[in-house]
Amino acid sequence: MNGKFFYTLITVLCASIFSSCVPYDENGSPVPNRRTQIKKQQTVTDKKQQEIDAKREELSKKEDARKKTQSNLDDANVAEETLANDEPKPRIDDEMDLPKPPTPPIPPKNHPVAAAVPGKPGFVFSPFNNKVVDVRNIASGTLVADPQYPASEKKHFRVP
Image (cartoon, rainbow, N blue to C red; front, side, top):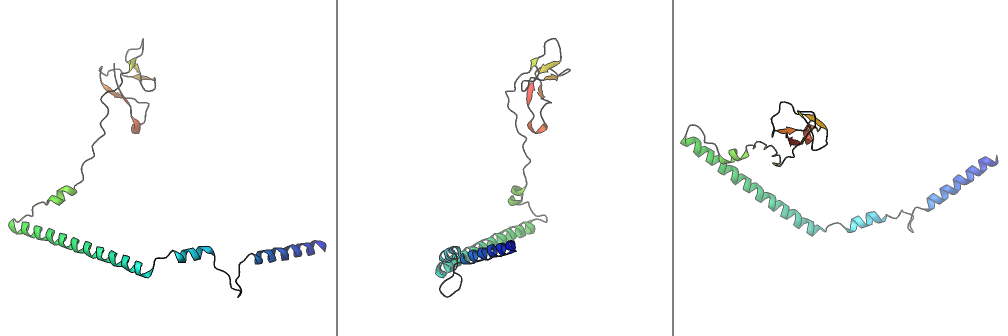
């Protein structure tokens, strides 16, 4: 019996502490927190907002007008080209929009030279990790990729 009374008393005390933590004004309504008050103070005034909206609208109208004049000029150029010849001439804009082929990366010109393995002709030590690489039937001075590295980070060396 004492255990139930004790737990009930603790529950009532906790409820009274939690309810007393909520701020109320004199009329009994909750007080708004500081975050909402700060947000209300930081809003832009109506006049400033109207000026900003007017500038945005003006800029968008200018951009639309510029796009229309550009498209009208392009249409006129195409019409003139079609009238002059039966086949339209390629425009400069179309040629510039073509994607350029990717250029492969240029490897450095000063590649290290591998060291020959003594007593084993056709085998060399890699200058990058000192592992033995088979270069039989490869001419001297040839650029060779080190097979120990993956394709993304290939390292090249010259055969001695």
